[in-house]
Image (cartoon, rainbow, N blue to C red):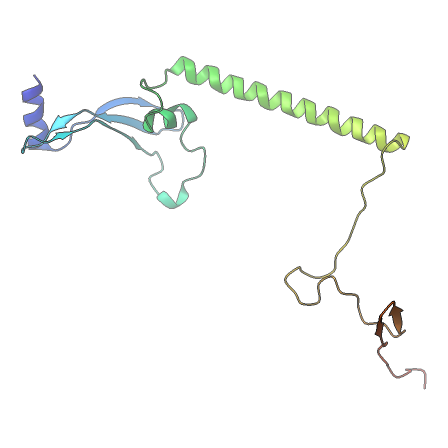
Length: 162
């Protein structure tokens, strides 16, 4: 049988076995180990045909973690439908728990601010952008300023009242 399969592969190109499809529509294939016409052994490969084949539109999470682990060879067997559903429900449960913890933390923080146990965070406003040369520098004032060893004269402007 393997000799016939090898002849078919060489004649009609690569034969791949469909292993599964995820909920996003990506299809997963296994290309079995085969010999070339020269007798060289080509090891088995795993591949995915994306539901959205445009490479520039790929975003993280386009392939579920379980299938990604199978593609990269970190697991021997492809994930089952039951396993995928179980892991999805577990992830949703964790997200809900994290949201509850965050809400409790915000309520506790607000209570501490209200009771005066914790100082409210200082709100700083910086003018300009950090890439500009004048970022963080004080604006020129009309009054001269002096601090220790440095003296900065004020900028003179004509009095508009005259």
